[in-house]
Length: 156
Image 1 (cartoon, rainbow, N blue to C red):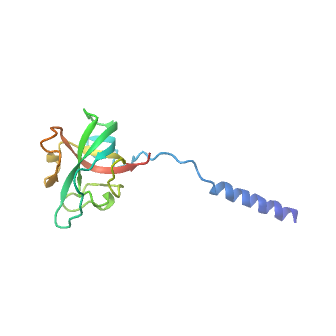
Image 2 (image 1 turned 180 degrees about the vertical axis):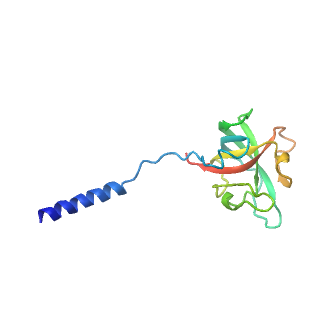
Image 3 (image 1 turned 45 degrees about the vertical axis):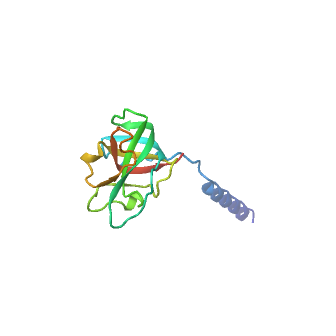
């Protein structure tokens, strides 16, 4: 009886230790794609999504959004604020690749102001994307527009 009780208690202790919540580590958004695609890699906070982001099945476009750069992992970024064009931003990044833009993706499900993204980028957008661009900053800002190739969410 004593042996069974000790074994039961030992098993319960083992199970509770294995089910204990492991310490949460911050997800940096790094993966094999974001760290190798593009010539620039940054972690930045989404500051503004001007206008309405809509899912229009008849029209593919890039929507320019404003970011505050928190860290540059690769490449060169000259300013703390950058403007990034995201292809069809109403769609989740893991389902965004298509015949027009096959080398694009990430894990962002929805763009929300305040979220932090780790992105693989190219610049200027016109050298990498030939399609409609919704740029509400046109005429107001003369900064280059970056092209988002891969966009992952970073947990704070």
